[in-house]
Length: 66
Length: 451
Image (cartoon, rainbow over all chains, first blue to last red):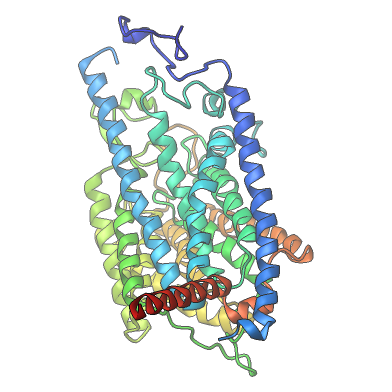
């Protein structure tokens, strides 16, 4: 068993193409990648909102002004 | 790779593009340094992060759809449908978009285009510092880096693009396809975003907000110059035979070509890169009365102005065209700033947008009647085609989408940071935490020394 389709290199390289793991699952990997990307934006947007609220509050709080 | 010559050509081309990519990384490093230096101390880290995150966000989206757009859109939507045959090998699920021993070039070619994408986004980034929300900017970075510039590249920077064929559009080193579009895009965002607090006085006169660290800024722009060399080389096909081009060229003499597969040489673009840089620096020094930062930027603007035709110009032409572009960009920058209250923190709209625009127009006259392509049936280079191209790049694909998206962001209240944050600085809370931590450490050290 080999995740890349080859267990040794006793091959004619002219006949070798893709050698990454889990060939055949490229669409699924892309879907996972897109979810990761969009999820990042969602988390970042949420965190930024919280940060801006917190910062604005701190700015107007005299205790935090040196 | 079934013959020695074929193998050598393939490996040379693969390595050639790989080296250009490494060089072009310096453009992004330079933009980061420049942008952080131009910001005030209270905004340092957020300014840096805003630019840095262009790298992953544009990279992944360029992998997901940017690269596909380049191959699918050369005639879409005005002169045909999507080219699904050519683009199928460039989808994120294609087996050539990964480790593949039958394909030695896609990854480095993809990366060369990707680095152009970072540059396009980075140009916009500098102009909007110190008041845009990072989330709002990163949406723009993806749109300019992985959508709009790629569409314009498919149309006007592809051997089969409709603008090249129908208009005779010629833009060898991207005066329009990178710089005019990015400048136009930045102007579209700035028009809605508005100026930084205090940029204009009560009478509407602009105030100068000087860079906090001129030395870091100088290193930054010199790095951009250096990376620009790599960019120029990346725009060429280093060596190719007429047989492979399969156009009108006869004989068997191999050549370097521009992106349209029209002949040029590394020698030509080396002459012209340096001469247009020099023309830009000299003109900027005079027109700005020796202002260091405008002089630095003028070198860049000189190259950008001449870039459309630097594959064919004589070095004297490159120098003079570079000089003309700088004067045009400088004057227009201050006129637009006063007239429309546009606060472009780093002069990106002028250096990239106006210079790129005028460079395209000038090249239409200087290269009038020259072939835009080695293939039959293509319009020759002409002033009208170049003017139309400049309007498409700066206005249609640059300013317009940026203006619309920024308007939407503004109406949703997700465009600009709160006024209190702008006054105190984006790094306010981080600084507070640092000061508290520092005070705690000092107190602990004093306690320890008293024991």
